[in-house]
Structures are given as C-alpha cells and as structure tokens.
Amino acid sequence: MNLKPTAITANRNLGDLTVSWSDGHTSIYPFSLLRFACPCAECRGGHDKMSSTPDPEVFSLPLEDSPATHMQSIEAVGSYALTITWEDGHHFGIYNWGYLRALCPCPLCRA
Image (cartoon, rainbow, N blue to C red; front, side, top):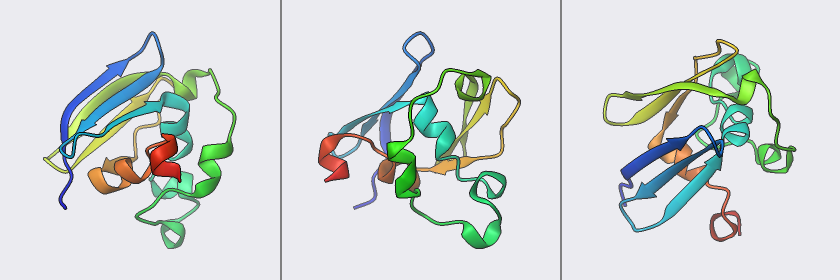
C-alpha cells in the first residue's frame, strides 16, 4: 500500500504534528520525537548509518523543550516528504512518508 498523508497540522502550542493518513490512521508526533529522529546524515552520525526506519531508541528518549525541539517552519518536499526548520537553525532532515509513518509513536504502530 502506498500511504500518503491526507492532512498535516502542526500545533506549536501543543508542540506536535498531526498527520492523517490515506488508510484512515492518524499519527501524532511530539516535536521532540521528530527532532530526535531527524533522518539527516548529521543527526544519524554519517551516511553509513542512514536507514529507511527510525532508530528504536528515539521512542524511549524523554521529551525535551528547547530551541532544538521548537518548530520554526515546515515545508513539503515535492509530493513525497516534509522538511522541518527548527528554532536552533537545524533544517537538514527530509522525512519521507514511509519514514514518517514508521515513526508513528501510537501503541498500535509500536506493537
């Protein structure tokens, strides 16, 4: 199945991103989780450590409130991904739809 978002909403007051998916599922991502799971080479520790799935460790990290986890802006990358600029200036991660869905923190997806 080729999953795509049908709606995307960033709520800076709550500090989360909500994605409604074409299969009817809704994912709510805390900004901290998105930042900890940034898929860029810098955050992953080099190109050789890049993967199409998030590191499972990101799901156990404590939520953090800092400029690194405050979303400044979000933009579409073509029709396949999002990129986020964080208040600390970081803006290198491209969250494609498959990676973003694999990052869903809900109990159903984590099971």
